[in-house]
Length: 386
Image (tube, rainbow, N blue to C red; front, top):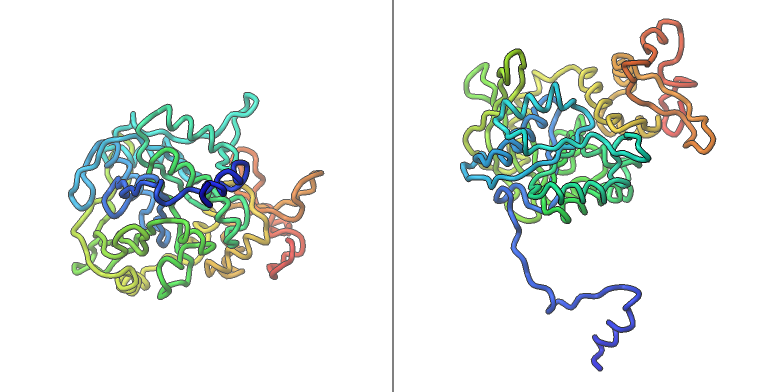
């Protein structure tokens, strides 16, 4: 008996080894050559207001209609899953899909999960098996959109281990269904000039887990008043990691009385992500939105999937370059009122969550009456509950 056979027999109930000669090499299966690979996870990041979700809907439209990619190549028609923790399908996502020419019958929105007859929010760690089964039942699912991708991480999005655990269900979903999975994220505020992949908000694990990282940015225009932007690659483990395409955004009437944004693709551009972003951000800097608006976008993304510990809000705000004063103003703007988790068996400490518009008390009223809008102590010092 050979040494390898002895190892195989001894590990029947333990570690499983596969001999290299028993593996058949396989080429990458591309949904869009060099950009979207089937069975792999991808990230699309950029500053707020660059139309990342609108780009994602344009990609969905291309897949569902069998249309053309920005490079002119033809897409194979297929089905798409969309899980959004931010935008409402009826008044935001569907109009954008219609404006882009999507086949609505091939788009499936993840609305939630049902447990013991009650509908609850979707949790990838808990509901992956059921979602995978449904995707296989639908058949021919070629693209999955997760917006924002931080919604998949229940733990601290700054810790590599917790991010990797949180993203693993998405990695498994993409691999098991054979779909390209695209997660939407932001660039950390104040990160201009750094390596683009390292600028993705949160742990470096987001960029590490993704096989391809893409970005969207406003770019310098030769004609004054022209909306010129760049969509490009900043990292790829499986193909080219530079170049991209110009694009612009326009508002159209998706159907009578329904306005929506859509992407207009332009010519291809050459250059590294760092070069193209440096040019784009140098032009965009004078027109930057005010800090409060950016902080509001930051909080909406962070809290989209549910309550987050106050300490984590602090840490993520610092990482995103949001000052304490700006965070306070954004909190008031969004009517976020922290609460103490004192339920037996609960997590303890202070938590932030987006208010339920049907029943949430106004944080503005609380502030006007002298009630802390941050939590006890009103301190934003590292390591302190509030």
